[in-house]
Length: 346
Ligand SMILES: *Cc1c(COP(=O)(O)O)cnc(C)c1O
Image (cartoon, protein in one colour):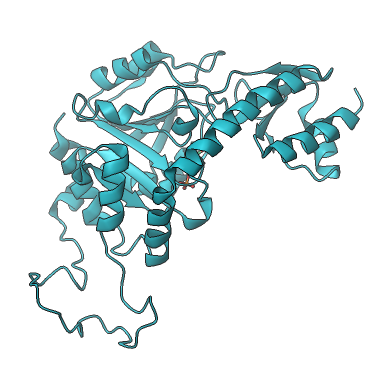
């Protein structure tokens, strides 16, 4: 892979914004900071945050067992995906490839950035059509998005298929692992040393229970991280989020236990849903949700709403006709859900 050829020319040439505290060389002395027009009276938050979230990345490095230089943080994974578009794709010229049915933000961000989106559907088992993907690659294809476990189907993509694509494609392969902590398999970030074109994205929004703080993680080779750092908004991770995320990581064992509960609840829910006459099929899941085929998704969706239960209707997505996507709740919520479902007539 030749990174310089993949990156947009204007980004290679541009100079990054130099933030307030970047320019001086640190000494051990106590410094008087009058360089950033902040209010000098302490509020806990009167200073700009660390643009590189160094403490947080150090802690993540320890937990994820990966060097800090390979970690970049974003205001949600959505910001990271947007930055990848802007780093690699020339508007109105370059193209990306996605594999429907999959996460909707890839398309939204492609449209926002005026990048053509090529679609190579997953097969009926929601697995990658590797040969079709490789055939669909053109000289304008800059990135391929693989969501594993996939949203909305819930299943992991085959390791062999992902590796074949990483080998065959000279551009960037982004593996979105928003749900990897619910899966039995370890992260693809362990493969970073073997595939220079690999970018792995994870999030605090799902297993880490902090969708509200907006924090996404990107793992990639150092040269890609440096380029992303060059184009990111200087203070994209605010101080409240940096502090909260450090607290969250200190309690990693709590979230591990929650993940175990969610995974076991998922299978309990599967068993109970299987008994429902109007449930036609429940797809295998490596995530914290189930894709459920029912007799009439629009009808069941509305009936559930009437009982105060909001699910995601995916009936319009490819291979998802009459499918609802249900997130696994707490044990109590799941009992309530099944009470409601049992009341709906067949
Ligand atoms: C939920 C989800 C995310 C998380 O996005 P954030 O911006 O980090 O909240 C990313 N990718 C997929 C496929 C998701 O389902």
